[in-house]
Length: 127
Image (cartoon, rainbow, N blue to C red; front, side, top):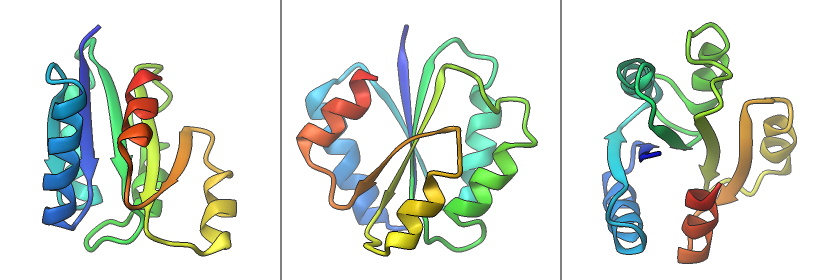
């Protein structure tokens, strides 16, 4: 099964760094970049009929549609709960309430703090 990683984050420099790290670890992974949750939803809509494993790295704080709004909208989408869509929150937030809130979303696989390490990316890609 092919893997596509969708990075949903408003920080272009962060996205560039993560793309380079992913490609260094596994050059076969397709990486798509989205600058907010709205473009991330459109990206997943395009991927929903593929048989690829889709790993989403989702930031919390973004303009247009933030990470929480993205997760709420996911519940109404046709790709909600698909086993090949794996979502991780990736945030610079150290607010304990964000970690607690994330546990209320059953479609989340985990929560990582920025900056991601190579070990974090290896763990994410191996799921």
